[in-house]
Length: 129
Image (cartoon, rainbow, N blue to C red; front, top):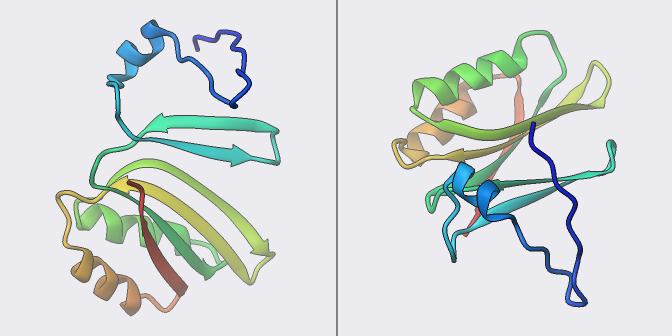
């Protein structure tokens, strides 16, 4: 993994090295997603597509529940960019955060398919732009 040291200017901005931008195909004016990982005390920065959305799924914390939801997304041609899951209430409730490209997917069909799954408690979509 490549790494570099960066400085934050007085307005809280950082400059991404050209080699990093080129490696990830990041262009001027492009949208990026910045995630705060409090547990590991780090920031995660990654490019998102114009059709990118953040999906927050609350589900039962039971074996296989996450894989069933992942299968629904895969069957609906969702391209996962970044995911994070964690147990909120051990053996009862978990949260799966998904940042994905939905450009080849039908959001209404995905919502319908997710509603059919009895392990899913709540689903919400957010635009990333």
